[in-house]
Amino acid sequence: MSNIDHIVDRIGLDISFDPASALPAGDDQHRKAAQQWENTITGVDQRFSSFSEFREALHKYSIAHGFAYRYKKNDSHRVTVKCKCQGCPWRIYASRLSTTQLVCIKKMNSKHTCEGASVKAGYRATRGWVGNIIKEKLKASPNYKPKDIADDIKREYGIQLNYSQAWRAKEIAREQLQGSYKDSYTLLPFFCEKIKETNPGSVVTFTTKEDSSFHRLFVSFHASISGFQQGCRPLLFLDTTPLNSKYQGTLLTATSADGDDGIFPVAFAVVDAETEDNWHWFLQELKSAVSTSQQITFIADFQNGLNKSLAEVFDNCYHSYCLRHLAEKLNRDIKGQFSHEARRFMINDLYAAAYAPKFEGFQCSIESIKGISPDAYDWVTQSEPEHWANTYFPGARYDHMTSNFGQQFYSWVSEAHELPITHMVDVLRGKMMETIYTRRVESNQWLTKLTPSKEDKLQKETAIARSFQVLHLQSSTFEVRGESADIVDVDRWDCTCKTWHLTGLPCCHAIAVLEWIGRSPYDYCSKYFTTESYRMTYSESIQPVPNVDRPILDESTQELVTVTPPPTRRPPGRPKMKQPESAEIIKRSLQCSKCKGLGHNKKTCKDS
Image (cartoon, rainbow, N blue to C red):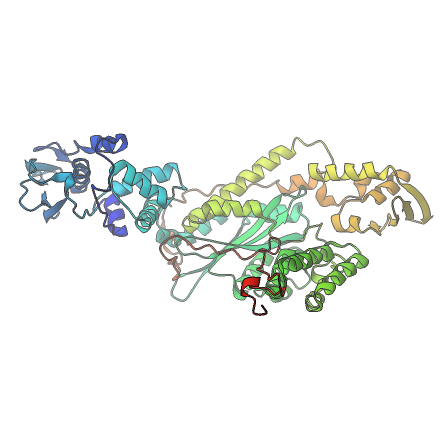
């Protein structure tokens, strides 16, 4: 059976050829298809390399000439086919040529007495053409949608597919192009070994369940580990993104920020779901990979066991609660109690409280929340502000407050998440490899001491500093007068405005002092913002992993662990995507203009 036969059998199509719904016979596209296939069967003595080739040719011939047929005999030695219409004499007989593997048409009656294309008969697409067309177009356009597949088949060949049939055809055709999901899991142990062989120092581990089915996969390339240790600030963003592949799953990610605030992927893992156990396992693998003595600041959600797992695995780390997740939880907890405007004000005040550099600003913002709702105020004060408010947070976040920093990485995932697991990982590897090379080349052209974005910020602060008056108080302490009076301690790299501490770059007050005493502001910038550190981040390369598609199997490969696909599978049909309501875009609630209550209008108000 050919690959095309396999596709059609697997998707179990029962496609109806209804001439009433087909385009007119004179339609250019439809006639083009008919002309293309009307001579795939020419008559007696025509030869084919196999019965599969003969069956495909016969099926195309029947489409071009608009009739249905059925097999009278169909085995490995001979095939007899007749027209499906009762009493029609059309038939064909083919068998093997003796002493060869060739198949030859021995008899054929090409005359039809039936109505041909006008017969409204069921039409089972049993061979080849659906897979052929889908495979070629899918190869050229990976985002070929099921609706477009059905529309193209209808327009070009006059055959109707529903959405589900087109979707299943696309899935199987994709499998033929990119390899089997099942085979991908089977090759996972080999693939992991190849990553470690081609990229020494990488940490790649996977686990299976008791029945040998896939459980989890962790990947951290040596270039990522080295780049984080050598050039990135000790700051990691933990986040998740869903995988809408055949077997679903979730991708856990740990990304950092380079000196120019570009995303730098450090590690990722494929797991079945976002659970406390999976997060704990991921963090253990991450700790063994980065193995640094520095205190790392993590910006992450505080739910799904992350709070507990981070404290257990990285016992000396700082955990900054993701402000986006915090705001979404507040929005969920107060939803239904307050109007759109009231919730919007409270969310904005929460953000203002988080970003406030001083206690006074924090207190002012949460008092604004209290003015709307004492319960919401209590919620905020009990949400552990020491983990999210600038006023109290002890770690260094460098002005980052949310965990969804890795948007570029998630866009790569969205391009590859439907691929078999080894192909998906290799696509991500390729994207990371290309990014590292591109940024290394670009940074070699830089002439400034700081990275471009940080250089720009420093110059803007320097321009503001020129209008300030500086007074020397004592030792390394100075007073800077402008629109306000701020105290700068040069030796402690501190200013009462707190910007220096929060961003890692001297604020305008500090720059005014440094220039007044004849020192260079560049010497007081975080080392992670220098061009030198940036180049260290991208000094190592990720190497290609050969033979991902066609591994060379040897005796050592045979000894590897057996891995089978996980038991959970994506249901057929269009994936259902339900996005949680964002705290930053709160939907307007229905509010009664009479009693001011929520969930109804004045016409349905019970008080009327």
